[in-house]
Image (tube, rainbow, N blue to C red; front, side, top):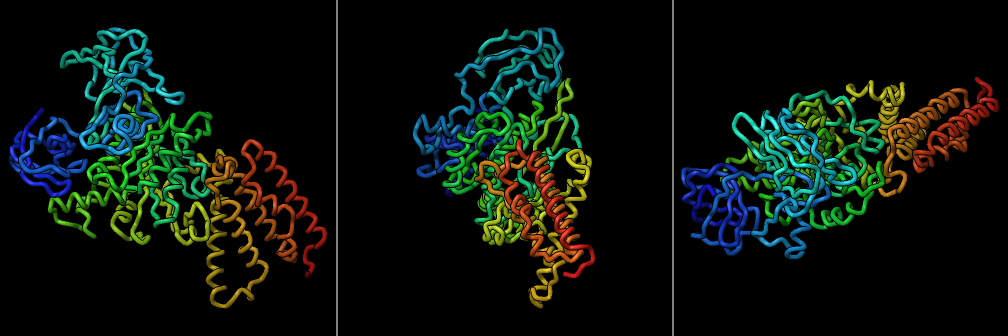
Amino acid sequence: MSSVGTISRVAGPFLLAKGMAGSRMYELVRVGEAGVIGEIVRLDGEKAAIQAYEETIGIKPGEKVVGTGKPLSVELGPGLVGQIYDGIQRPLSVIQDLIGPRIRRGVAPPALDHKKKWSFQPMVKEKTKILSGDAIGMVQETPLVKHWILVPPWIKEGFVESIVPEGKYEVTHPIAQVKTTEGSEKLHLMHSWPVRQPRPYKTMLPTDVPLLTGQRIIDAFFPTAKGGTATIPGGFGAGKTVMLQSLAQWADADIVILVGCGERGNEMADVIEKFPKLKDYRSGKLLMNRTVIVANTSDMPIAARESSIYTAITLAEYYRDMGYDVAVMADSTSRWAEALREISGRLEEMPGEEGYPAYLASRLAEFYARAGRVTTCGSDEKCGSITAIGAVSPPGGDFSEPVTGHTLRLTRVFWALDFSLAHRRHFPAINWFMSYSEYMRSFESWYENVGPDWPKLREEAMSLLKEEEELKEVVSLVGAEILGDKQRCVFEVAKMLKEYFLLQNAFHPVDMYCPIKKTYQMLRLILEFYERTKQAVARGVPLTQVLSLGVKGELARMKIVRPEEFDETNLAITKKMSEQFGQLAEETPEGESV
């Protein structure tokens, strides 16, 4: 214990203590007889300002404050995957078994099960030279995750003096003795790491590999990268939560960390109830075998909400160091920023724009800067990545407010959720004019491996949507009667593109996930139909006759064709399109007026 002081003032979750000489910023403390967990957020001589992670009802001046001597840290080791934690890594399922569904203050069971034994397979022998980040052994954490036991970052290099044989061990059991220049140190299956301190890596790599999500509008038009950053702003009811859940289920990541930061309790309850039942599409195993959930609802103390983002990104860095691709979904950073604002107000700091602290932008930057694709520490050249996707809930859908504005400057992908699209039941409600991705140029060569004409198809599709929007303005001014078949063709095919391609049902057993190859083939078929329609209309074929072709119905149904059957469907539609447009050409000779 580093220090013992006494409470001098209580103001809700904000406490002042005196006699705290020797304390450090962000040090964890225990407050009062109840042992309420708190964190030092300001120091002034022997006085400390403490933000409690729990309710402070009943705590009075004069009660003891005991320092722990360490900052908020997380336990890292086997048993993380599949768990549901709160913002300071308390396992909610364990707490429920201990005291019931409500968290009682002062209760803080270990984040990892210290009594469970794991099957450990050593990978090094005695006298082996090791470096920080090297794997000394492996534990099969879940059917989908091999948990590599790494040399902790503070051990730069050394030699293995001894290592236990293959067998079952608890996370606290010493498994190796390492000789370093500073002396000898025991290694365990687990270690701790401060959440506000980024874990080290060797080099940052280019973000030139897309993170496939199975969502057509994202993968085709606005992709993000493995190791990239993205934001999803949208007002209430625009579909942020469902979209993040879809990304968590289908994203091409080895590990998914889902953070409910200040979300409504019923939404988090739905996630906690739903996710353990979902299956991973690649393996057929349960999705929780590669998922960690950090749940911090809006009725929990704000300090725990503020720390939940750091807890999640630290867990992500740990699995990144093993060479995994990790996706962090934070819902939402607006609630996190509100927690910062409340803490700042209690500290009587000078407020910035809209009452947020002046350091809001730098705190957001610290979070997104911990994303990236890196070469990890260690003898082997392992590559791991963290993709950070943050939802933003701007009040009234105002994208100019500070949290959204700062986030847009920091992230490279913007998926703008449009309430008008959501109101029309068009989901994902991503506005294709407001959204953008700065990774497209980096991905061109990758996409050309899927289809050599992919960049061309994307440009044609976006041009079609823009042309339709321009025609809408003309129609709103002078009426639809002035439009000829050429202009109507744009309207009809743009409608097909939106309904058959961009519209995707997150609850349909087939349409909820679309592989990249199927996405490419669907886009190619719709644009081929558009090209043939333009040619037919130019020859004088009435647009109504083109739209009555049977192949149009085939295009409408292709989204619900199973991926393994789509190659056959693609060939069949291409053949029918050629035959039916060929018949139109025979019935209407070129140049004939109809």
